[in-house]
Image (cartoon, rainbow, N blue to C red; front, side, top):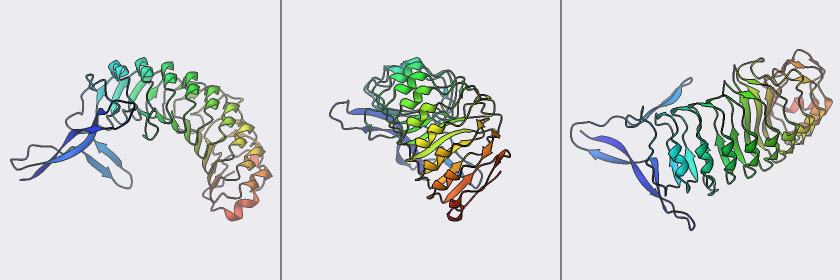
Length: 344
């Protein structure tokens, strides 16, 4: 009987100014066995119209993360292996680490402040996914020390956890960030969106500031986010759980300054909040937007639909204003747009 068993392997990275040997988990080599089958299936991908997911490997599922990782390690990936327990503080000793991926496990507890010592995270800009802990059960506040990771350029992602507070103001120091800043779907999250995020002026792709059903954000959308003029795709401030889920304050309005994001091409979404005031006419300056202009379910917004929204002349898919208190006519660009939703 022939059975394939997946094992971990070593990987070398050649770089002139860093250690050349690193351990990675998850790169596998097949080994053929001709005895009675003793190996188990390592990974099963399940997909259908409604279900997708990964079954964890039997070797690691239910185990804590290793604490004896060599200090010469430069990249570490434990994605989707079913690890449990807390993130070891010992990971903070890996001073040469440029990439850390902990997503899709069952990790609990708080994020160690020691991760703020990994100041080489992101040093190799050609690597993707610098720091990710998506879809775990991490709780507590995000450490202010993570603002020390100033070499990061992409993928600072802690969405899908149980973090109790909004992100610290120190994350505004990650001024080299260009893509994938995501703190959405943390249902215990409270506090305010830091104005300091407006300092991330090199952001081009994916800033998701979303919440879940029991979240309670208590401040306005910072006008400083209008400084992110290089943003091109995926700018989202939204709730996952309906109109009352993402409370930005009873006098929070949609900042006119967001009309400065004139490089936007895909997915501009400010929806399912409790915003008031009117729709800024400055949004008509988003003239490069091709897909998804969404102001859905902001039930306190009033006034008329600005005629200036006719400036969205490149929009070809999904224009949404879902609000029973807004009046006016659909902008003239409507004849060029394949409307997926127009609601009033």
